Structures are given as structure tokens and as C-alpha cells.
Amino acid sequence: MRKKKLRHLGSLGLAIVIATGYSEVWTIDEIPFVPTPIEVVDRMLEMAEVKKGDIVYDLGSGDGRIVIRAAKKYGARGVGIEMDLELIELSRAKAKKERVSHLVEFRAEDALKVDVSPATVVTLYMLPWFNAKLRPVLQQQLKPGARVVAHDYDIEGWPPTKVEKLSEVEIKPGGRVHRHTIYLWKIEERPQRQEDRR
Image (spheres, rainbow, N blue to C red):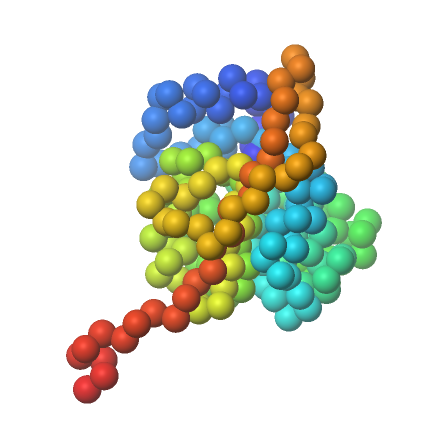
């Protein structure tokens, strides 16, 4: 999801990050930029039941393809959160080319600190440690009815509403076969505490 020099690291880069752990402060070098195939993007949006009127936040938005696709296909509004300024510029150029600039915006922000409360849908293609740190933010800020969709990586300790392994396989460099997995969570109505009922 990040810098150009890391695009060539592939699974090796992911393994290094997982093996070495993480710190409270992270940089764009910690998560590589790995574009989500467009057929996976489409299935993520379908599973989230994206429609006109939704606000889709993509955390670690890369080249902007998810929010641009949601805007073009469904008329949904979108916000891409990305720390790589070059990718933000690329995303804005792509949005302009696809004529959805009026529906989407791209912000240079830390995805772990952004306010996601306006979102009705949040999409993720981040590493497990990142998803784990993001979980309390999503659970606290998202309103009932909101959906969270993650590509390939689960959110530890949060049972998904639905998991789908795509039937198509992708052949990675070196001949490695990869089957994409999509995880969906739906934010439920929070039960009222006893003191709130008084």
C-alpha cells in the first residue's frame, strides 16, 4: 500500500513487517503498496452492499481505486486516506479522468488517527497488526448499520459477519498461487447500559 521501492518486495516485505512487529508510530515504509485486483474491489463493494448515499472510507487507499470504483459504479461518495503524497496525486488524477472528482476526496492522514464516524462503509487492505490496532476505533466510531470490508487479512478478536474465498486464483510473481479472501463485519445496534435506561 505504500512506497514505490517496496512494490517489488511482495510477500517478502510483508513477512519482514510481520516478523519484526510494529511500534506505536508507524511510517509509510511499514506497509507496502499492493494494488487490489479490480475483480476483488468489485466483490468487496458488493459484499458491503454499497449504494448511492453511502460514504466509503478506504484506509490506506493507494491509487484510489476502491473509492473511485464505488463512486463510478454506485454513485457513492468516497474518502481515501493515504500517507504517500505521490499516490494521493495519482488518485486525484485518476478520479478526474473517471469524472468522479465531485464525489471523492483523498487526504494525507494517518489511517490510525482519522475520524471514521461519517463512514457507512470502511474498506481495508492492511496488515494484521494494523487491523488489530484499528479495531477499537471502528467499533467506537462507526454507527449501527455501517459495514467494514477487509481484503485478505482478518481483524483479530472480532468475528466477521461473513467470510468469502474467491474462486478465481491469482498467479503471483515466481508462480505463487494466491486465493483472495474477503471479510465483512456489520456494526450492530449497541445494547443500552442499565444506567442509560433510567
